[in-house]
Image 1 (cartoon, one colour):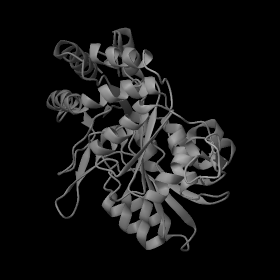
Image 2: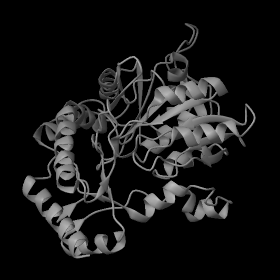
Image 3: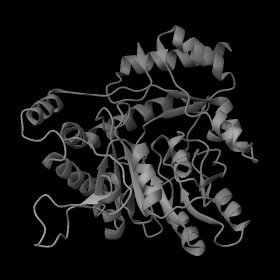
Amino acid sequence: MIPYGRQHIDQTDIDAVVETLQADFLTQGPKVKEFEEKFADYVGAKYAVAVNNATSALHIAVLALGLKEGERVVTTPITFAASANCVRFAKGEVWFADIDPDTYLLSFEKTKELIESKPKGFFKGIIPVDFAGLPVDLEKFRGLAKEHDLWIIEDACHAPGGFFTDSNGVEQKCGNGVYADIGVFSFHPVKHIACGEGGMLTTNSEELYKKLMLLRTHGITKENMSENHGGWFYEMQELGFNYRLTDIQSALGITQLAKNEEGVKKRNEIASRYKIAFKGKIKFQELPKGYYNAHHLFVIEVDNRKELYDYLRDQKIFAQIHYIPVHRLPYYQEIGYGNAGLTNSEKYYSKCISLPMYPRLTNKEQDMVIEKILGFINNG
């Protein structure tokens, strides 16, 4: 069986978890802080806040940025539902802009067109997604956001280790906070860094960092307590949540993070082999000059997608579809979200299929995947 994604747990990961299980803290201990500091350093951000999953991260990100009921946020329809759901958690309204047909990323031109079609202040923020591991050009989006007083949350769940090159020739790592207010990452098992479940927020704003820390833990703090208070004293300053990550998961995250550069390099080698095999025969995600794709996914487009999906499953190759456009999901349909002219997103969804992509995929396994796909296409 060849899945589309698979975690890689080795003895260093196991040893780190066992060591933490034998230590004094299973949660709210030193491993969480260590993971946060190492992750912030890895992406080049000033601050990082670990949480129990990326959905929680997105939720408190919109709250920290002050999103209120009825306020509007733009995002892509080609993403996991959580990128949009976080706006709904805060009783905001989601507006979808179409994707670029070649990169599959939120189209800057379509987003600009949408935002400029409304009066200033109509929208509050933008949530671009580094889809499949390919970074969004956040420099462009930052300029648009600045002009219209918008915040930006970078959904980088697919892209730890990815970067784009800005207009000054500087490589901007996903989640480094240079152009986005907050970055969000996922540690689900099929992602680059597998913690079972888990998420991380990154930011360069001390104010946002403190707000996120409060929201993560019930809105409770012991900081800045006066000497007149006993050691037990605390204050609940916000209506927060229990979104904490454990030390057990953090220990695993630390060892997984240490291997990410090697893992991303291997993912790019796998992507290169796919591209050589499919060039001129099958469409795949474009890689703009100066970009480094972290390759959570490798997506191709085919006309007979359902037939290929079923055929591969018969061959024990478990490809996947990423994603059903969010505006098509029953919940969003029921609250009035239609197609809204998302032509590129609709066309992409009718053809997309994600192939096996993970560091332990062997050349022999990949050759089998390529052989089966090309055979199917040639005979179809």
